[in-house]
Image (tube, rainbow, N blue to C red; front, side):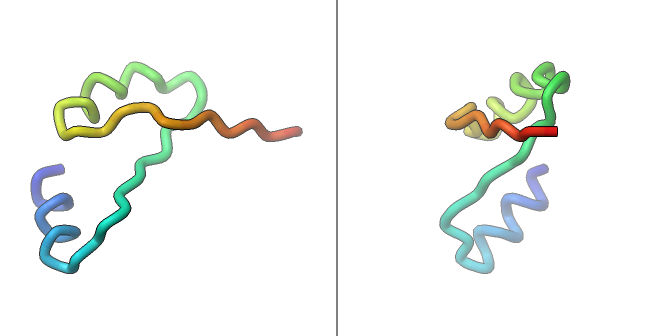
Length: 46
């Protein structure tokens, strides 16, 4: 994760987003350590 964020910083990436699938919300605490927080919920119709 640290290498990925550094790479994005080096290439001037301004908008960093991570998609988390339904049922995998346990990873939120991991991403929170790197400054990512839930911002939106996307709904899909099957």
